[in-house]
Length: 258
Picture (spheres, rainbow, N blue to C red):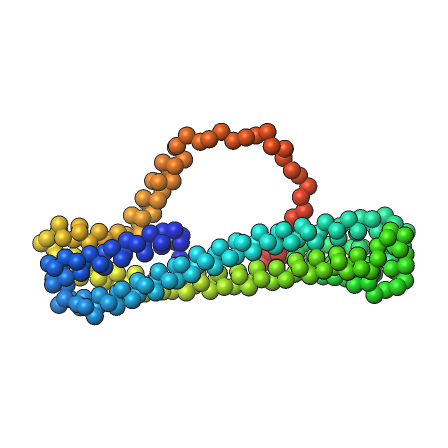
């Protein structure tokens, strides 16, 4: 479905106004009873509106959780990446004439840049140093104790945990979006039938139809576009460009392209 959640949030507000206004004005309420929108029919619409509103809010919550975990993943990656790459760079130099040790540590050949690849590579690297005495004894002069290596390895474990939480959040986000969109089709169908009934019953009283304030999605989209244009035209506060630009930040591993 091609509607943003912001538009759907506005539709939640607009549709409730249209439903409730018909019950607050006697002429309208009495005119639509015979068309299937008596107390029971209106209550059905209210119930559907309440469920749709819940699903829209649930989508917003799931989206915020996903975004928040995305930030946590980036931070956890930087924390794990720093000590790892520092140790890797040091050992690449020290073991440059020992291809067998480099191979055991996973420091030869091409690198997998995905999240799974980073976890696999760091796991192989640290586990080799922690369990292979022959390799470990070659780096003792760098004061790299097993306790220090384990502490660095634990940072990778923390990154992996947060990354899994993010993957779970992505799944919950997709399910929330599907549930919202599926139910919107049902609720929108009810609203169309309700609007059609109101316009038919009140065809000779257009002023009452106006009181129902029916709003289409296209109208909401156009209003939002207009607001966006107006906001862009407002004077902007000058930005401070004296801040130094940072470069060379490690990037969170990307997932392989589908």
